[in-house]
Length: 591
Image (cartoon, rainbow, N blue to C red; front, side):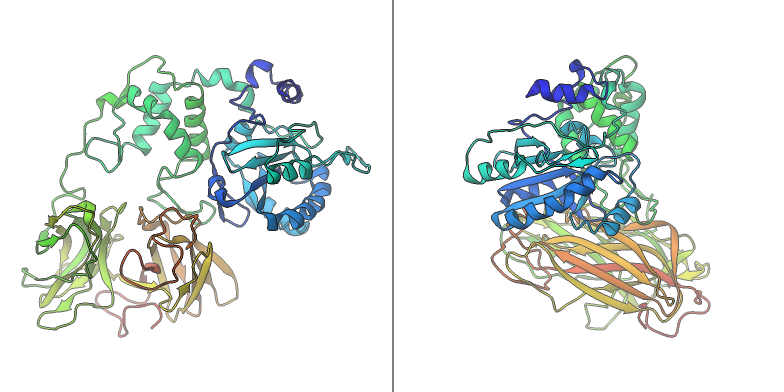
């Protein structure tokens, strides 16, 4: 079997020395986890399919006649085996096939399979993909490869014949019956897939840690992975990085790190943390080559921890949130402490930095919109800024701000989540502002799109609601932030313009509760009056969601983490409004 795989690889000029396990997964070996987006921007993670009896992956490539002829037969196999717990996916590792072209191929040939886009080619390399139309059968129980090869022997180049061997269905029957697969490998036909890096494995050992890897880690990872940072371990040296190298490879393949969850196909964001495909390949290839130290200095040794208390500089005003005793257990209702504005004058807030006190027991902190002193209300209907895990200081766009009147109180929404240890919270909030005598030019607003009346059925893997917001005045969107709890799965914000044209402003195909990210546009987006914003959000209330508190219960809107939300926050300004000519209507986009 191994010789057969090597012969196939030899067609591409890849030597036997380079076609070992690092490049070719053989039947019986474990297939490592990975996550990819499909042609519609939906996320697929291999190990999420642990509730399946088998996973079938066929290699697809645009324009390949063998694939086009094989797909109808694969659809027939799917119709027979899907109800028996078999999942079917396609994998495209072609360098030349963009998402637009793959989506067009799917539409033109009525392909209704998810086509996973392996844009970095790392997954195809690791599987040892040689030709399109090759099929991989994986058993989730142990994640071992059970079969690789063609579906059957029906197809050859420019001709067909009745199949004598039905390799795929025979393999599935064996896996479902718990029996060995009699033919775990077979030769097949298909279009060759070009993997330029595959025959450069020896050169990967020459990747410079000093000049390439360490600077990349310094630029993209050390901001969190430093002494005192939010990362669980610090990248302080080559030895430390090499020790964690297998884990780094895993989180890169599954795209858990760096923590950036926006689909790169839509929008350009100035706070993007994602690696490029070339950066991801460089790092993974270096790790797969053994993470060699090489020559030169170790730049990580020279990094000093960032000990600055306030990342945005010393605030103009620091407000201490009243202390709160958090018990070790139980459910705590939202707390709304109020603090009188000590300034005695109007100011325009331009940035906010929140320092949670009892970090491990705080789900979030929100600075509500100003509440007039003496009033009894706690919820003002909006907020100025917030903190949740993964959030950075909130810095408003240039020449914008939020007015805080002299006669208003600071009101904070505090969501405490006991974690087994009684602690006292002493949180602080730093405010940066401009004086009312020197205001920013534009007032800033926040609106929220959400459905309050949803009910997520027990066990639902995908439950989606859609909210539509008419836009009655021209507006400029600066950022969008999805917010949900432990069952949040995906969210998409779409603009529908007056001429009927639709544009996806943000797609978050893999929402992560641990990272409450504000997606800041590099260039703010203009939305004209007469348009609509459409917010679509999806939850996963199934046992496959590892963070799900209880998949057996229906879930509705609620403040607590074991309840749910699905909000799309939009930070914007009106194009016809300035601080000297304020709007006469409420500060939401729908009014």
